[in-house]
Image (tube, rainbow, N blue to C red; front, side, top):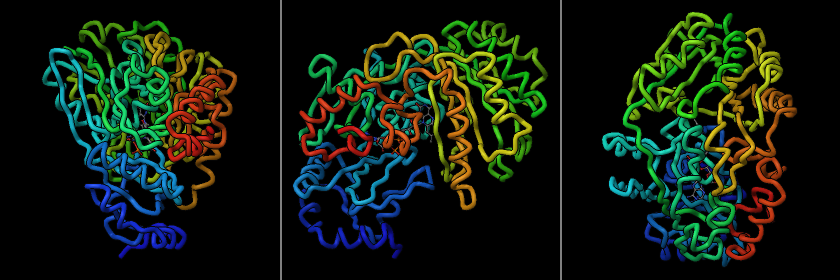
Length: 463
Ligand SMILES: Cc1cc2nc3c(=O)[nH]c(=O)nc-3n(C[C@H](O)[C@H](O)[C@H](O)COP(=O)(O)OP(=O)(O)OC[C@H]3O[C@@H](n4cnc5c(N)ncnc54)[C@H](O)[C@@H]3O)c2cc1C
């Protein structure tokens, strides 16, 4: 048997009567020493440490509510995990997994999707694409719809359609007081907005209903330039991106592809510039808009073309396999010529740094105009930083990554979307993700629906 969670968690769970929890829920309940616990908590980020006192594989809202009430009665905090792309530091808490909550319904007439909390974007994309419909997914379809959307959700159509949280129309949640609630912007505007910008701070989402968009055709994909062109490509992107119509969302990254078999040979072990393009329009339009970037230098690989929404993962080409990583980011009010020079000075081709990815995304457009949820509205760009969290690099990767994020402070927006702040940073400094107004709103809702602080608000530094 694999020992998971260490002595503290094992002893704590032995002292608890899990039999009562098992009787209260339909799904499985596993203790730290159980081999099933490892599989139940396995996720994408292999660097995350999960050490809950027990894990409940919830089958629906009733299970979530029963588990929350069981934990509340014992003064135990509760956390939730779908895919393990985000953070879940569960030391000493009860973990609820949602992957069995797999409902997926699409109504092509109203163009709405209803999904259970455990559904990943890949299933929605597969079901919606044949109908000419799409969701506001992010760069990787392996990410969970619920965790992504309740963190705002920045995707390749953001300039035209805004944050994923802008399109949500109904939530079913279990609040920290153990109640199952159906929430809309009309029925409980404060709870609705707060859940759409604070993940599991006050409620666990069990079902989510959102509008789909029509994507009859699109033009997009990835292009790569060799190390010697990185500076020219980034400088050109800074001048070009603000000239684009909102139908085109782009980002540019400095990619240090690891020397591993999983990476295709032309990129393996190389440092390159990576342009990512998603255009909601014809190939002719897309090609004309892209011409200035193609003229900067000849790309070593150019896969930007007419494409199907079903292939949306090819825009960003995020690694599909689980890996141990550290990530952080910041939202920017603007990207000026000096911003790019700052990025190049910290992460340009000649720098010996252990970061896989430093990405600049263009957000300006519908994201600035939305009103729902808690996403910042003054951000026109964002920066994401990712590095490997492996022995020997556990200190240097966060230090280098944070150094870059800090260097961009002169251009920062009022705050950063929750999906892009390192979870440990936001726990220590909630003001990175929320202004004082948002913190007050989260705390007011928490006092109403989670008076005993069973859910994540305290973990996120609120309340
Ligand atoms: C490869 C990769 C690509 C990404 N690309 C993007 C992107 O393009 N745009 C973007 O905005 N973000 C992106 N992210 C960030 C991602 O959206 C967040 O990490 C998100 O929280 C992941 O949610 P999850 O459910 O998949 O992960 P989990 O690790 O399962 O959950 C992470 C957190 O989400 C919350 N959560 C999960 N389920 C629920 C629930 N049912 N109710 C309430 N809260 C819940 C909890 O706080 C949980 O700790 C990316 C992350 C990775 C690893």
